[in-house]
Length: 155
Image 1 (cartoon, rainbow, N blue to C red):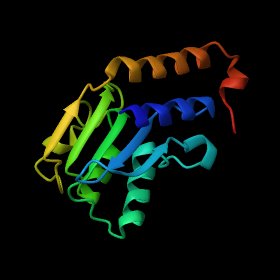
Image 2: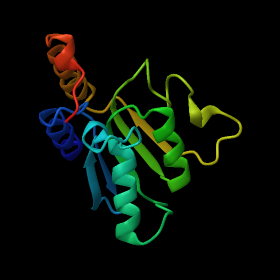
Image 3: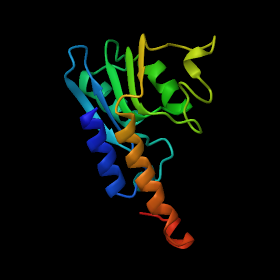
Image 4: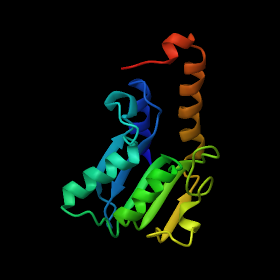
């Protein structure tokens, strides 16, 4: 989780929502890491989870990340949860809960749906929740303090 938190902090410094993700292989070795790049790339799908999963797949030469773990600082949204299924992630570990936008334990609760393509064998939620949440709170507090025109930024 420490590497994911580093990625999240980097995202915040770049004006992105501070979410970071890492993919580990079955032995716990780092395959990929990423931070949100939505604003920078002008791409609503450039979430840290998606970027890390893509990089890991390229690194191992397969879209099946069976045996792998995704560690992310925030509960994945429904889009990212669906991607976990398509990439066949074995374990999901996440930090802060996301009651508004989460897709795992909140919102769509994708893995509880009967038509879910693939479910991680293990989900660990709330790891380093306090640290993950503090990064998010500080980021959004800073945004709220900006005048509206500055708040609507284009990097």
